[in-house]
Figure (cartoon, rainbow, N blue to C red):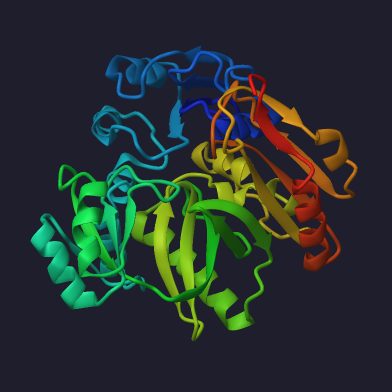
Length: 386
């Protein structure tokens, strides 16, 4: 089959799926989306929308029957059904095998360790007593995590001292879900590297992004990151090795810590396009979304070269706003030279919900940062009910 004639199915109808579709449509692909929200971001631009819950096996099978290849925009889905479909000959990328390993942080870290990829030390902690033992092993503070389901800081707790153990244990479900303890990394910078691998094994690695977080949610990504050449090379090589460890197909994001002595440790891996890679839409010759579509359909991968220094800032729902979303200040923000505005089309806004992002490209990174941060101050996403 001609690669361009393949029908693509996407599990998830949010902004990542929408940006996949925008690139896929440039090449003429037919897209079916599975998402329980009737007016999700993907709804207005996909060819078909299956409105059903993500754990609805019949709906997943229906999506597969309408598609030559199935992909997904988030990890928290039933890998067992995807594995069953793969066993029947269906094409799922990234593979259900890699999804199974990565969506559990413990098995993810074990795979990285087996592949000689540097990470923070970690151990399983099923009980409160084992969390105390983790404190004896790692010292305080250390990080307690749920093995599954966490995102944007949810599912993580900082255990500052012995007195904090019970509180952290209760906050993460009192052992109802598997937990793991991780040695605290005193990092000076959080970075991420996007990598894409095609069906032939062809791999492309993107420039290093410097990620700034507020309340555990990504606020800003600055590219290129202000790190030395050795650290840049080391982090990009590690991202490529991670793709080999998981036999990845499609886009992966590798989040890393840079320590005070410029060591690089892998934090977490996401088997999909990622928020920190949004800069690539305007900043790189080929965006992460276009390369993801190319990879899963068997097309050659595009260049990941950075065109100009780029800054991306997330636009979140205001802290006090819940209700019908309204963008204010866009006119002023769009006066900024080099700015592109992305509003995802979510009908309802709520505190700290990701509603859009802005990107600024400029001749140098300091100019891009200054322009992006000034524009960010002008634009808000509020509720019409407020």
